[in-house]
Image: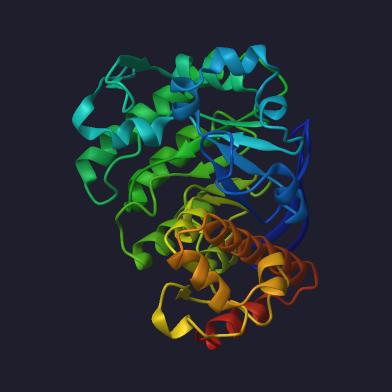
Length: 366
């Protein structure tokens, strides 16, 4: 059910297909984040129109509201949010561990207070799997600890916990129609990443995620760690880089062997008046955009760029009309999804090396 077929390779970059009960995940792929079972600002129909192949939903948030049991009773996430393509749920680990002032960790799990009402809750590997089974996503994640990436001792302990919890997640899993991915931790430290990868590869997950990056380390540290991890992970399993999603990072990471990505950046930046360019960003609230008749990107074919000017989008922002962030969200998602399509095509045609070097040799200015 969860076969990963690599159709083409060029150096470390791969183009593949990962089968799931709700269709194939065509890689490399960018997954928009639908934290609350909704990608902010767009409908499921618009996501289909954007050729979205995979979306991510958040275990921690959906557990707290409306509750995973309610979602299960209503037919699972696919039915609940009217999305019939593949869904991935994270384990809740990142959100729990980000609550540094209101949680305590032990080898069995994490006790934390809800950010909504202060109520006390506990996540264990078994609890995380039970919630994700209720949610019913196609790809689910092992419960892990995501620490400060540059603290060696903290990461050493996190690798121990994450490895032990991964085994417990496998033992707790009951549903056969969900692929459980393990998560490699270890911060920016190659020896810890190796320890983590070796422990998890022995467990033979159908896919592996690289966790604990884009959370405070430098860009150089992130890219070197990706290289280390990809050398340690099986060639015949998909590789998922968690929480990374700028155009530059996508190109760089596919070049280093990553297949799956997710990030809140395209929707969050849109709500903060910022559009992705092919390379770089554009603040549409700038005064010099007030009379600009051009689209965000003249080479972009998204709905927003085909129908609206920068001047109109700035007017929406200044007037505080909700349509402004929605239109920018459509553009930002299109930019990343189309970029991944182009990358995949370049790999299939054995010209991704040319694409890569041309991409970083040119810039698009606002």
